[in-house]
Image (cartoon, rainbow, N blue to C red; front, side):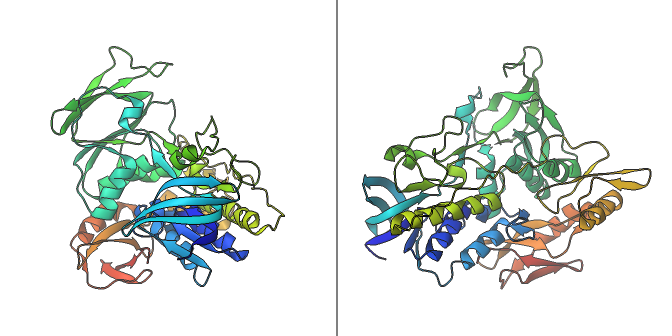
Length: 450
């Protein structure tokens, strides 16, 4: 640890890690401040695959993506401080001071440039003002994901999901594989918000119904959730009288949107974008406070970690240029990637091999809409015998959850049975990328971060 760094980065998720790499590559001394015990951010709890298709050209789980990003920092002039909560930023002109709470006490870190890479947070029940009592059993999708994937907790057995965002869809599949009954997904808008691939693979694969133009209009229960009332909504998103019905359940998952984490930025006086509520930046990703840059989901929520990393590289490099007086700032590239969202078309297969997500159809024996030969082969297999990569967690000898994934895609029809068989596995030894266990002749690889 030093008294002064050229660049200080707040957050060690995909944005912070990529920004640190870019800043160090230009010769800046860098420190990363992370409030959790290890780097990776939200990626550590995202055990599903599909990350890295753009950046690393292969499908990775969240922990695998994080591990690669961390490995890329090896040998660089980067200090990393975990279990470090940033409580205050102080603008002293050319130098900034960062007040950090650690297990050892308060620290003050001085720096020339700051990169805000603090990510985003979920909308809560209070923010969407759902009426009713306040029993246990109501979770945001990210919190449920953390409990299940990181702690191995059983959070419920009869589940309703409000909102069709991707995290909610992914948790619908995850909870089904864990043995829960997902009774339905209810979306207030007229069409789903999630990716078509997730609607297909997380809902349709398991027969989970999705209804649009609906909301949870009341939460029912005393100590534990007992039921929810769902209702149709009008054009003003208000529940329509006479349309309510009661669904008995013990768990409600809220997947109702993400908001840029802006508390530190606001306290420092950074102007916020009225559209996104994230830090407002110029073309080089510098905020209204000179020397303070922002990137990733704390600026504007992006759909892919790959895009977050790409944008963060620009922010990190420009923060280093500012600190070192190099000039030659790089403008941030446009990152609006059109991803296929909404209802999957009937008799159309949405390819999952890359973010492009080609819509492939077969007509008169001919395939239409595919962009590559791999996509064509994927569609042919999906038509006859759908295959899926199974991701899950198993316990090691210390009771810790270890993310694993099948080394090859497995038949869709075998997913639930394979997951149930994996529950009896206890790992004595495990290393990322190596075979952790074998079930019915199928090898499962450790897919952990570190």
